[in-house]
Image 1 (cartoon, rainbow, N blue to C red):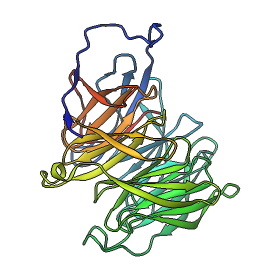
Image 2: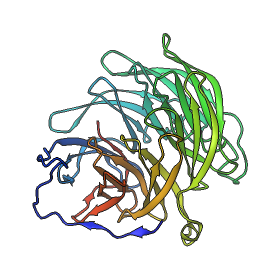
Image 3: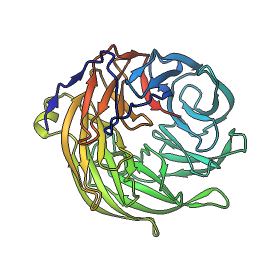
Length: 374
């Protein structure tokens, strides 16, 4: 698993499918949440999936630290957790890429670290890292976010890593592929807290948990494309814990953990922290971002048993990759450097999943913390 230095030079050459037919380009909207000093709001750009060209990002909505974004599964609406006023904003993309604010709702328990919308589009949930809570908010027929309907307070901490794990710290929210269960990895508890969804009342009820190795610090997670496995990214140990998942029972069985970086590589940095994990839509590749080392690790997946194998580590050509994202075509990966104020583009090899840096000027915007293709 070595750092690569592959670079693609684009000289106006055409791109083709393997059957020889020309590859038609589609231009996608992409939005960037921002966080920290110098953050001005949500930015918009366009992305060409033929040549991997990202336009220069422009301010789409002026908000104070909109750190994470989510999209409605059916409506043309985006949701942002805004740290400046500790609220959720519902926004409607306009034809020029700008965002019209539909409404906002106070979170009522501090800032949120993450937000996700249920597949039905009827409600969303948030994770409040500092206050250790999960909030539930209904969504009306127009996409507006309503007042909070439920608040769950996580209890206890594993206390393995002092200060980081003395108390609960939920860090991500999401749903099982069938929408029957909600999942909330908690960095302080070394657990994924599992909630059962009542699809009639759009409410949650605590159901169970999945326990990660002590001191792991769960941050984000993803399901395999067939829904049989969970890949949990652990921020503190810089590992990916794999679980088998029973969709009927909403239960898990721990399989193993895989290091995102080799120890000799990890130990060269003064500080390292895993940040984001992605599963390629084909189901054969997995990606995770490494802050400090400032890289993306690439893994091959064996779909039959869910095991993963580290393949390469690619520099993001920036600093502190808090967010990475795949474009809708699955041919490109974008990596946002929060401290370098940059977004770099990588081509994905369709056979190996490996990344190749696109050698052109990287896009610049202040403090990118989230990448969203709506």
